[in-house]
Image 1 (tube, rainbow, N blue to C red):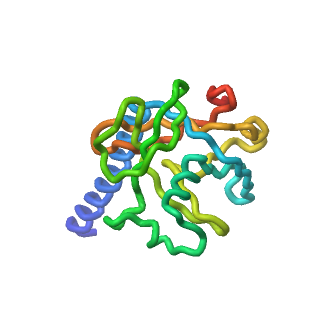
Image 2 (image 1 turned 60 degrees about the vertical axis):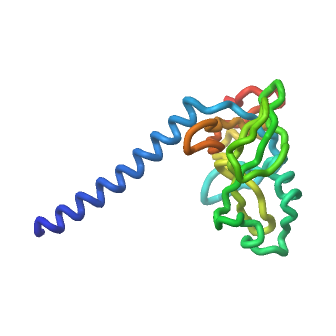
Length: 184
């Protein structure tokens, strides 16, 4: 093998490793420094033979965004993509005393928040039978045979970046019950 090929392979490996380390650092910073936000779940209970036990996550807040943007199954995704061509947008949510997020408005700006408001970056997805809005992830995988304890999950617990270039990015921490405590 020539030295040039060795250098090219080494450079590619360093780029790939750099990409993975950057994503790990980014997600760890959100988990460590992010604000805890609870989003109310809408019940969905799929099972997957190939993937194992999991729960598709649909959020009441996402339904409100869908109603505000007036999209339905007859529209193409191009109809709900923002003007800059990205599918990601921001939702402003007001946090109550229990850190549960409630819809306030949609915005493209990271400025102009009032007290007890937080930006949530959302994305749109499409399954076979519906379009939906999700925050960070659209599914939650759990150990096979433990589905019963998640059957009554009421909230998704997220850590949300509140500053810097990642503002509004959401990382799912886990699911919570009616008591707003993490299900373990």
